[in-house]
Length: 455
Ligand SMILES: [Zn+2]
Image 1 (cartoon, rainbow, N blue to C red):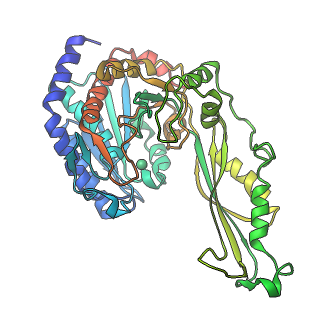
Image 2 (cartoon, rainbow, N blue to C red):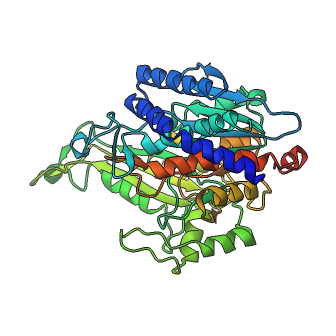
Image 3 (cartoon, protein in one colour):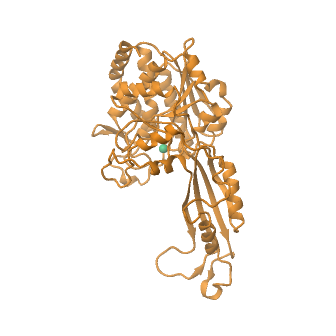
């Protein structure tokens, strides 16, 4: 990357700092909780204005759900195109009394901007918009940049796959980049190369039309709670593996490099104590990234109040979530679970299915991002083969067919989804620098090498 260009762009980013904080405050003021149609519409149009101001051509895409925003700066001849993805919708704010300042009254204290959406995800996608403004004000945007900012991420992006599938041409790019979530708990920036998928099911058994007296009917009447607990327990073998047939079919094992990178990751800090970078936990990371997981997310049946109530509950219900790894098809896995549980008298319904994603760890498109992070943070990122959680990353890797990288800009203590969400101003400025540096780094990549790097 041309160091003079980088310097002048970073200098412009410094000059934009006040404006960035102001823009973020304006976005955070809009209570665009996912599902709240009017506030989401207001947020989409506020983001559109920011994009126009940064030199983007902007379109608001209306659909069955909240509007999505598409913004574009066309690629100069023979240069690659990066698609940045983000979301303007936010999580609900309860419990309200746990907030030091109200969630939709952006406040700056301790060097951070507090408010719902500050980090997840308004502050992070704003970095892309501000970076493009800094580039346009100085050396010009050297590559094609597209932005896709949707408004339904916090409720599982129900329309994103259709939206992407019906706009393949408009969204065509060489690589997709998502700045969302936090970086590693020990402060390391991350580049993440895929996510686990998610299958979410409801499992219910019904018995008598009402709760029954357990003395008058116990041992004689149907007992849905007993049957459900037995059916759920049967989903696991004694060694903890999943007993549902075909569950492990077709799973792609990690490559040597993925395995090695997983071994190098610092130990996650679940206890809230000190993290220790030298305590690596290969088997633990392997389980969180490369193996599927079955979890009972909720159980509901009968009387759970204070004191005694002797009933046979009329109904028992469980919520089941399954994390899926590369090559597992959520719909096929669902069919296996449904068959397995139906044989045990359980009624099963599907509530969510998100396929996993995987970008090859040796994609040549990661190196420019890595250099950009080093130039803007003075910190070498950890390369994390997979996220244990789930994002709709498959719409890029599978629907759009491009490599996709997750590059979080917010720190681990951003309190996303929790009261007192915040983003440190320094993270914000660093994020703007990072996106600008990513654009400059990609401009050195020949379009041919970018295109052949696609899967
Ligand atoms: Zn979120």
